[in-house]
Length: 342
Ligand code: TXA
Ligand code: MG
Image 1 (cartoon, rainbow, N blue to C red):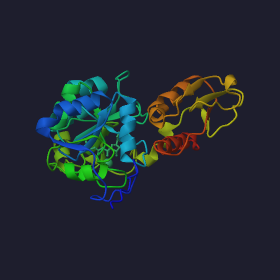
Image 2 (cartoon, rainbow, N blue to C red; image 1 turned 90 degrees about the vertical axis):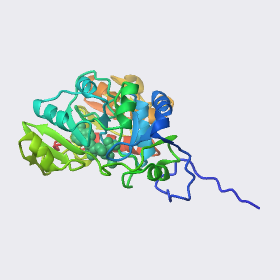
Image 3 (cartoon, helix red, strand yellow; image 1 turned 45 degrees about the vertical axis):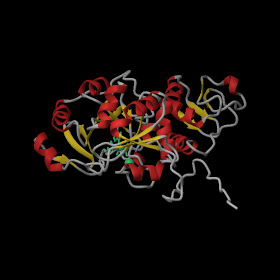
Image 4 (cartoon, rainbow, N blue to C red; image 1 turned 180 degrees about the vertical axis):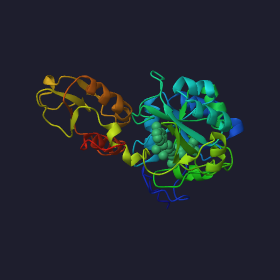
């Protein structure tokens, strides 16, 4: 007699490759474009090859798609993601280029270079991509990714295609073994050329800072820039140091069951905290209690309540499952004592 053991859906961190059925379709780059496009247009995510590592891509203007990226990676934290563009014109609509960044883009794009730049207002990029920062990391990938983005006509947010705590996937098979039960499509472009992530640079007060070493060596960059790279922790925007960026001007009070006078309310689900009618402003992250929807609304809702002028934002309890962990992580950071530099 055969005993069929059902596999739990969305089990996180227990993927022994070979033991878990991989449901994702794997299509070669030559035959994947239309299918990848359709999934992205529907707000879904697709694993795509780039010259550095495989990326887990979603439409950067669609908050739900971006939330799905974090969800598929598992044990999510909303680190800012790189937005991938098809050409300089698309990049210019999203961010402002200082002359040095423009020179670096000219020299290294398309290629394994990411530039952190000031965002333009109303660029359509969902705030979950940048974790609410006013800067954005931009990169123009080579090959299939570039073609896909050009056809979509919108930037793709894409972190490395690996579940949290695993190394970045550099073959379609590695990506499918890791994420295959959580995504629908892996586009197979063979082993990636670079195999490690892009170099991340930011021009700060006229100096060129190396935020992450990667696919292009420092010497090559320095030759083009005509200046030395600045290294070290100062000013680095590593995910763990972003606390102050998430913090609104108002104080935050979490897991609130009763609203105090003068507070704004950040709600979740269908049941309101006691005294909610008195809230000076109200935003519901997801009326139907959907954590994915809540994640995609989080930064915008916090910003809106902050603008209401309330001195305190009261936050209803949010469950810790799924994306709730990341939402609670970000709320805890926002509620943390102020004064840290980020
Ligand atoms: O090669 C790569 O860069 C790959 C491929 C898929 O493009 N992507 C990648 O993404 O490595 P990810 O999400 O694993 O790493 C993005 C890095 C993070 O360390 C994040 O902190 C940093 O970029 N980052 C993103 N936006 C930033 C910003 N506005 N300021 C500073 N750092 C930022
Ligand atoms: Mg990564």
